[in-house]
Image 1: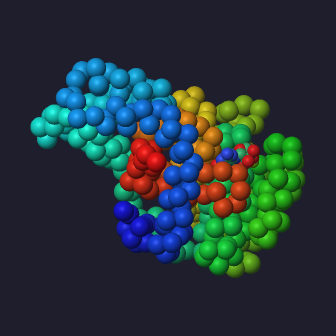
Image 2 (image 1 turned 45 degrees about the vertical axis):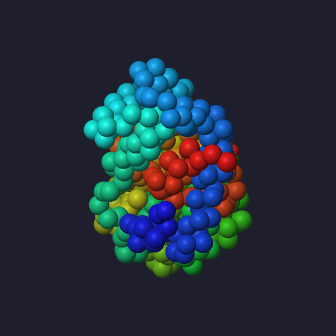
Amino acid sequence: MSFFKRLFGRHKDEPQTEEEAQQEEAKVEQSLEKSRSGIFGRIAELFSTSEPITDELWDELEELLIQGDVGVETTMYLVDRTKDRVNRNGVKRASEAREMLQAEMVSIFQEYADQEESRSDSYPHIIMVVGVNGSGKTTLIAKLAHRYQSRFGKRVLLAAGDTFRAAASEQLEIWAQRTGVRVISRGQGADAGAVVYDAVEEAVNGDYDILIIDTAGRLHAKFNLMKELEKLRNVVRRKVTNAPHEVLLVIDATTGQNGVLQAKAFLQSVDVTDVVVTKLDGTAKGGIALAISQDIQRPIRYIGTGETMDDLAMFDAESFVEALFARE
Ligand SMILES: Nc1nc2c(ncn2[C@@H]2O[C@H](COP(=O)(O)OP(=O)(O)O)[C@@H](O)[C@H]2O)c(=O)[nH]1
Ligand SMILES: [Mg+2]
């Protein structure tokens, strides 16, 4: 397993003990329950016999992957690569091919995972969170604040940069109260740039370790939203060089291929560093993570596994794929 590999990983908020790592893997496993008992369970079954590998087997695999929201393109790519690997290794039985299918899935996830070291030691460490409305940005921010504070003892500051949607600031304030962190907010209708400016100032002067910025997921027009995000990014950058250190793009797993398409728009305006896949617990189509990885071409950083503050796990390709297939 990958516990120890993760202890020396590239991020400053990785699990610090084997116990923490195991807890997170258990969360991921639990959130993939529906996927496992549905489509991916059927794939596992398909590859559980010692029957010879046939064309029908590949066809069925293709169909199931598409049903599992892996997406047509990624499905084709994955099946081709698995076939190649099977042929190269002279594998003849279905049961032996399953391991190869899993290995190819892991390699899709890892294709973008080994980017540069992103562990930055600059303070404040600034994280900007972007994504469409309802994808889970504000909830993620609460989870991250809780994680950094309770597990790493960091001083966390939040910025209520979603000033467009009614009650968005209040929602962040409620979470902030629950986690006991401070939030900079000017309420609905305020200039988000001013909120972010104040927050960065406060983070620097108040000696905070981490600043997490919430943003709008929708303005009157998509063009405006992207311009606004760019503006916020520039406000941050002007005050702290190399910031934001992380731009997390949040994608709701239950929105399927359309959700991935919508999320792609964000790549053009802000330099997304990582992806967060939320609500995996709410779908039987966990294969969407593969499509996301392939389409967005950024590492998946976290998995949202539920609605409470503790429902967050760091993504690990190997344990994720294992959890998709593991049988009770
Ligand atoms: N089941 C589940 N629900 C989630 C998760 N993340 C967020 N949600 C829910 O999704 C809804 C929208 O979340 P919110 O953070 O307000 O999205 P935002 O509009 O992007 O800020 C809320 O009802 C959250 O409780 C998750 O990982 N699992
Ligand atoms: Mg929100």
